[in-house]
Length: 378
Image 1 (cartoon, one colour):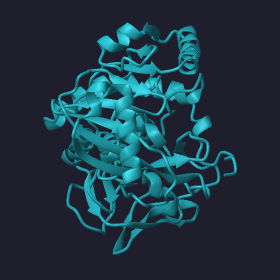
Image 2 (cartoon, helix red, strand yellow; image 1 turned 30 degrees about the horizontal axis):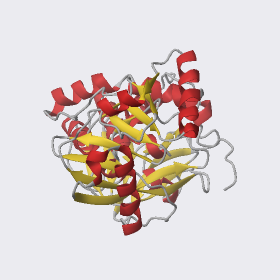
Image 3 (tube, helix red, strand yellow; image 1 turned 30 degrees about the vertical axis):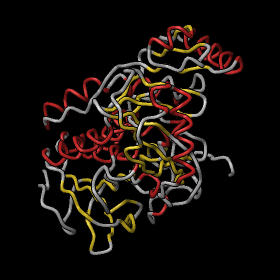
Image 4 (spheres, one colour; image 1 turned 180 degrees about the vertical axis):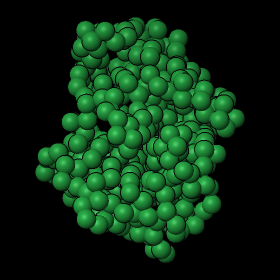
């Protein structure tokens, strides 16, 4: 049933995945494992956009503002990451650097401390692991002596997002996914059903199309993405050259610091609306320098190793768009708008889409994530 791994436009497949980031590659891999012939269309290098630019935090609790569908989805996906890391290691030989290291969020004022206290209260009521910690504890973990308290979230973690993207692409390729280099222009439809994807040079026929194009999803004709529902949100990150003085992810009111390997710390991330401009600005670098100095004194004088920017796929209500369209063509599935949580939500999104393609009930209630739900005006 598989179409093989030959690249190039033309021919057919059981399913076409548009977008080669972590989410798209994971979906393609899971579909190929289920016995489908899969073509994945990506205009650049797989994993070369938001996946490459991310920080790799698995912050289901760190990112949550309260109980609700996003927290539930994040927790379900976080629980899948340890086994996924092992599966990728076995399939590709790549260690993606998964660490259940925990997140330590620092408070620098009474207002910060009160916000952390409230977060700790609702999370512990929800039977999640969360603990308020002292200023002294924060310092033992490498945090700033200026911190007056902290919130430890021991079950959140991290991985190396670039290795993660590389491993997912390789696993998909080895499972038989056909990678097609090119720009998808349109989801082709006929008689109320999809029939493939048109590219700049030719087309690929398929009865199932998955749109996982990140910030670019709304530009694909026929994809059914409501106008304004998905947009690019620029995030800038810097890498500092030093041996990480902490193992946890350090967070604060204005950013975070992530240990990466043995010789660098990543500090991120800005958040601004710049269209599809991926320029890393001096203003963004200065902002991240300030974040670094605030979070840990060891980072203040560290040499700048690198800086970059990426485009997160933001959604109008900060929830991803996952599932089918009530009035859309048969065989069309969206998996986009993951915003700051694309790496975290990769495994659960891939399993949901696989189940939808195979006609199985999804493992979570997709109502809050319906692509055609009402969106607030921006």
